[in-house]
Image 1 (cartoon, rainbow, N blue to C red):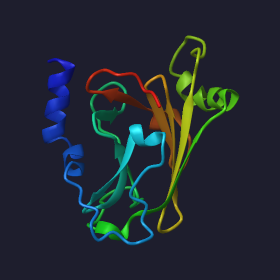
Image 2 (cartoon, rainbow, N blue to C red):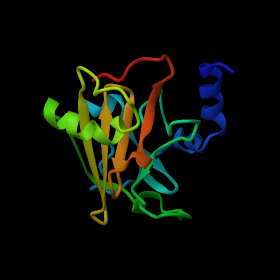
Image 3 (cartoon, rainbow, N blue to C red):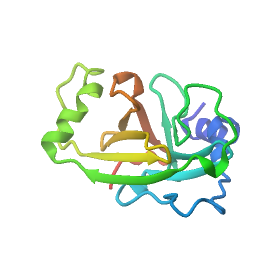
Length: 173
């Protein structure tokens, strides 16, 4: 099965399909509904019946390595069995910054542990901090090498994910 066919099937049958028809009308005034640039090329806020979520921007899929397991980050921070919360669970703040090269290299280390090779050249990284209505935060690190990971709550290699574009574009901002 080609990657394009697989992505098409995911669009229809995956948990991410619930994020496709998000309607943010009626969101609280304090809810942040747009991700600041330059991360807006890679990340969007999706409004779902389970609350707002950080999700891949149009054309992107985030998946755990080794298979297709869609990744997104809900404002409703529960370990299992999310409830229908609608706009009650939302992000009150989303901050984005591009990391200086030295800090990008430091943040690459959890992912670098997956590879035997030395750190990649020309490494760039974005840090995204999304704080929900209860002041709980997701911290994401996205790299221009098509990898990312989350610190929700801890930064570990277990939270690593791939960023795949349907047209096989590299991550860029």
